[in-house]
Image (spheres, rainbow, N blue to C red):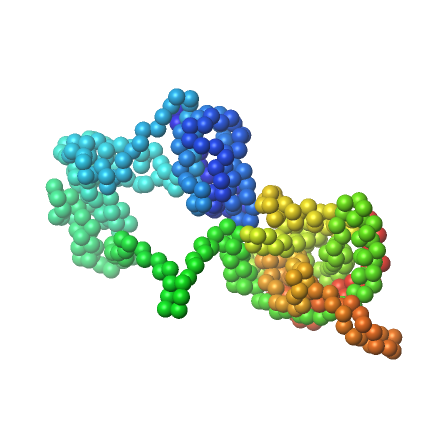
Length: 453
């Protein structure tokens, strides 16, 4: 018997995904747990396994299409089993005889009672078969012991308004109750909440244009339209959520990282021999955690429902990674327990997995604070958006030489620009400044944590 495999919820809060690639084709035999499709959901591409062994009878979506959780992804059956194509109502009506239409309606009603992906369509009870032919726009229902004909829309409106169909005078074909009949009945009653609900339901929907015109140019020249989907869609949603919920303020300063540059240059060559790429990020992570331990309100979330600030006693640091598909933020879990070498290896690994979209969904969740680095492409200062529901984010700029007065003499020093955006509901500017000063002190003296295990 054919089994309809519905697109499952592959991650917390996931409601839809984009079909990235089919790994099988219609007619193929599959085994239980065999990957059949790759779906891009949120910011990761995940493989969807087959729930059972069988034959792929039908694939219900094309590559590139968006699938909602609960929609049928594929139909799987036994070997030799086939699916009988069901004509669409529009095509069927053109050629079907009255008797065929009646039979088709019976099958549709049976399917509705069996349920659909989004739930059950509530129908009025039918205890006996209709004693006369029912038109395609009305179905027979029995109310108060008397049989009535009513369109589905009329039945739904009458139920919503609390109107008994037996009290409505039908004017439709074959004595059926129409929307106009329910509207008229609702209009003759007192302006109750139920009546207002019926009037609201019966408002005609805006007419949809049969042809959608998409302009390829305007008065100035040609245009290119790029669909918002995948990572860009997820990022857009996340950014809107952040600026809607948090009150963003950005504090900026600079750290003299001359000593850090010297240490990194020395250690980089040693680690390179072991196949480890050492960037400045591991040092920033260690300095950041040391500062967060002294300023815990930046390692927190806001519980708006209970009006509480939740201070996190662990340190999961998100690292924003630029990929061809957009920005992805994998999270280094329990980062405070890892050494500089451990962090260097993990950052390199998650950056590669993010770029080729093999990152695990679990690695994109659980962050307590995020670092984003524009220095690699030449930026200095910026105003980063908080990775909500976190309450702060650090942006590091490019390290550059700056003339500074040091120990009574003018020197050229290596300087790292820092931008800290914080949620002003959770902490004030003075606390953000104190945190940044503490972070600077650690970056300027990396020997305090360099060889920490």
